[in-house]
Amino acid sequence: MCTFAPKMKKTLFILLALTCTLTVNALTVTVDELQYRINISRRTASVVEGTPTDIISASIPAVLLIDGTKFQVTSIGRAAFAECTILEQIHLPEGLLVIGESAFEDCVALKHLEIPSTVEKIGDHAFWGCELLEEIELPAHLKEIGAEVFGSCAFKSLHIPAEVSFIGEHVAVTCPNLCTFTVDPKNKNFDARNNCNALIHTPSKTLICGCASSTIPEGIVCIQNYAFEGCWDMASVELPKGLKQIGEGAFKDCFRLAMVNIPAEVTAIGKSAFEGCNALRQMTLPEGLVILGDRAFRNCCHITDTKVPQSVTIMGEKVFECIDESRLVVEEEENE
Image (cartoon, rainbow, N blue to C red):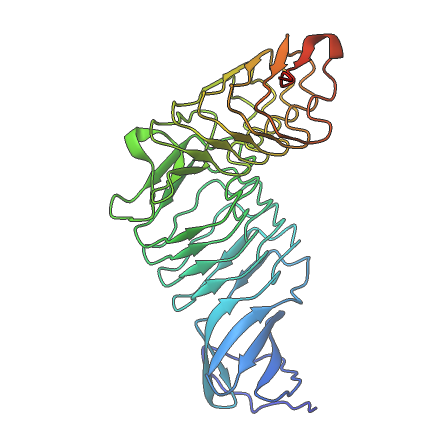
């Protein structure tokens, strides 16, 4: 373990204060209140946890100069700026490759952010809770978007570039202003066919994320977990013929959803799929349904007469909690 102070140099990247903890091949330094992890052999640097939560603005350089050696800043590490609740603006450098998990989570004052063209990966929850973030442009060479990255953000549209090959669950949940999804037509993994305002995983025919203005196109066989959770303004939804699975929490807390027709081909309704849909009144379960997950219709207190078909072989707990038993009929297989 060592502590040293390098020679001060008049350069663009002046180290005002430098402390380090030496490990096998890395050291940690403090530059202008930000903490960096230095990889000595690779000559790279990553912003890491330790940013003061009262910081208002920050600028991350493309290169750190440490005692005459240049280190390129290639990543923002896990939770590097998490809960910096008065952070209003930040400059990210070209050459940055990764924005890590929870990097800007709960930066509730952050209004604008330009993601460098070099970024290839955005980790889980990276911008979760950035409630004032009204616009974001994803770079052309982005390849991976983690789960719950943009939860509770304020932007109105989301465009997926051509090279994105992975998008995690819950990517843009509870974004009240979001009304438009688009995908670069050259993307082989995702699409938003027929201006449906929803993100579809093309190979699996799975709708992974939607909004109140989405339409679910023909050909979709699965609605992914939490795809429409928190779409408070969704009053109705048309589920297409051929749909087979409705994922966990798919329409959870869609408070205004009053009617849903579940297609005959649906065999599985996941946990909490319609939980909290307080306005739901009309709903018919199809013959051929096999799985009804836990709490699938919990707190859907206004549903009228409901019949559970005898094809259901797996029925979870508290599926119809809040519905009067007099309005619920469970078919039983007739004994021969």
